[in-house]
Image 1 (cartoon, each protein chain N blue to C red):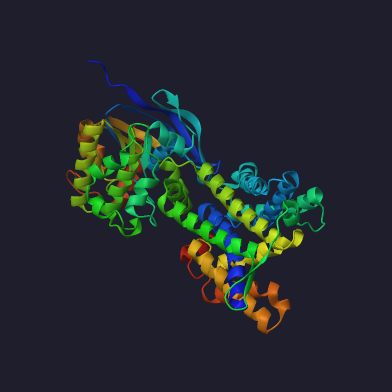
Image 2 (image 1 turned 30 degrees about the horizontal axis):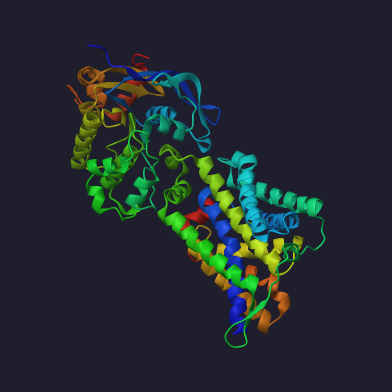
Length: 265
Length: 290
């Protein structure tokens, strides 16, 4: 059997904001077709910046991939505009500002530019998130957190993605809602053959869903491996999954540990 | 009765001009302070097409309207596109410079002499008798009709068409719009084109009703308070704001002093801004962005 095709290849990228602030450095990752890949790390680790670099920056971000390359299906995409990357089939569900708050649910779906795959992408969006049908006329600003996340994923599906980038799927949501979203994402992946890159602070959620994972610290990738390997890794268990053996360490000890340890970078 | 007719005509003029301010602001958050000059250019374009195609007035008007739209697209592509992502203040200053340049260019191309596009077209502007003793010129009646059609078309376009919804989406959250496949520069260029089209239309009709020279930009400037009073991001607000300014202006001219004509819109603007700085129908957060 042939090995799955590499759909996304990120090679030693460096992202700088305002031409001087380096947010991520030497980040490399590979995503194969059909995989769910998790990008783990704490606040400020560079996960969102990496995802934004893949999906493209706009002028007002004042950011650029200053070194390295990003290839999607063999095509270089670094520093291209988000709408160009979206039209290639790489669609981002952002962490914040994920819906147009003053537009209704139906208008949010209509606003997205349909991908070339199918003419009825809006129907696909409602098919996977049927709750949105009864909310069609409601302004997105009045939706609950879970409903917003559903709308964000649904409107991303309208663009007919092959590679879906999801930033903080579980942030601020109740565990029951997160479980429901995970179930739907798995269903969507299975039925539409999507490849997913998932950025998460919640390692439990991410490793439950992912096939492969990368761990980021201070703008670099410090560890990667299959979800099973990461789940059983001592550092991941201790600092991301909360499985402490023996005496529980306080916050100061954890910070000291992180400073002294350079991981594998 | 004549007073009411005057108010409706003036409100229609302000509304037709102010919708252009709202369109550009709503989509790109830029206050276009060259709007009056773009209106002037639209009027001069009609004068030129009328002179060229004197025997075919309808073609001349249609050609001037299309050229007006193209001017807006060109202004965006050649100038304002470079301002995307820059500070709003820089973009606003850019429109002020553009206005000064356009005013100079119209004098260089068409001279400062007063022009009469109506004569060039070979049309006349008869006075129509309404109920009572009230009268209205034919062009003023057309202007009221054109304003109604423009507003109906804009409400329909922004509310029910894909491109209109995308325009609203781009105005609310440009980054997310781009991530949803919307080409921001295309949307902004369309907004500039539509805005200049409506400004040009207003300029043409005003010049047909009276005459054409550089002082027309003052009418464009007076329509700015109408957009601000209504709320810069609200099309309905522009309509109401125009009515308020027109009522105040006509009544003060009639009962106090005609010399107040140029001051009244700004006096009303100050009064509204003190009480409700984001305008009557604008959203509060828009004020922070300005």
